[in-house]
Amino acid sequence: MDFSSLARPQALRCGSTGALGAHAARRRSAQLLCPRRPTFRCSVEAAKQQVQGTLAAEAAAEAARNECFGVFCTTYDLEADEKTKSWKKLVNVSVSGAAGMISNHLLFKLASGEVFGQDQPIALKLLGSERSLQALEGVAMELEDSLYPLLREVSIGVDPYVIFEDADWALLIGAKPRGPGVERAALLDINGQIFAEQGKALNAVASRNVKVIVVGNPCNTNALICLKNAPSLPAKNFHALTRLDENRAKCQLALKAGVFYDKISNMTIWGNHSTTQVPDFLNAKINGRPVKEVIEDTKWLEEDFTITVQKRGGVLIQKWGRSSAASTAVSIVDAMRSLVTPTPEGDWFSTGVYTTGNPYGIVDDIVFSMPCRSKGDGDYELVKDVAMDDFLWGRIKKSEAELIAEKRCVAHLTGEGNAFCDLPGDTMLPGEM
Image (cartoon, rainbow, N blue to C red):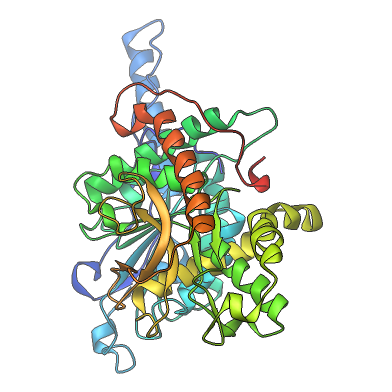
């Protein structure tokens, strides 16, 4: 996705909704900011005609871009329908990078009720760029053709201040990929500016209890930038996606132990979403037994298992020729469901969250993946009863050092002074190269 310009340009909303609260009669709107100034030539009359022509053209363009998509133009009275009157209040989900491959898999899962259930109507608000606006229209058309009964509104646009309005969830997927010759510090700055702007927009217009999941890489530090630019929102509500890493780790343990992956529990990914991430085999379990009792090959656990999980994304790109869009979308769904579904007794899940006040001794004021539990209310608590040994702690400190260095590199975006980059080697995932 190209998010090179986020200065609140033109935005388009297309949507429909039922008669639930303020959503009963919502209509699309378009904003045209900084219109082109007319050029005055020859005479007052010529100038007048030119101004009128410019305004007429802009009005026509606005009307054209304000077209909604078929069924999403309709106002529904959900409370009057016997089938829908027991449904919950509409939930607003904003998605950036909505014309990309990850979103192409994710949006249909959200619309189907896979995350929130079959009694939860949903509004999808899709953020892209001027370059991707036509593609977003195509996405909206596909959502329309899919006839999802729960999907009651679709909005598309390029202005985060419009798309994030009243958002209950914000899934921040869009980010600039790392190209040839791009230094890691430069990528941190480029994408950091995107997430600083999006943090400001969330702070201004989103629900005061919005849950934010940052997917665009480097997601830990982007999440930190975002929350620092949203001081009115709870820092605890910002997440960096490390669920795909957890899923990959479970798969590798299942393969080694000769069991199906639903037998793997208590899997933690500690640290950064990079090749310093720490898949924790010390606390993980297989069929309720500690991993080290089932897999006695310590060398495999410390070396092969860890490296395979860390580099799985790069290997997939070599095999497939593209990044892991489908499995990333699945992991976003898993991460959301972990927050809206009570965690099974004794188990936990991984997510990158704000470290201040953590019980492990990890430095405050970074976003670090840690083990969490939820009661299913969208909130979470850090797991306190975890074991720690020298090997695990040493790996955790290495990932911590990397995130501290990244934080210094984006200090100008978090309000902490001038940036200073002393990154400890290039440890981004191979897929970001």
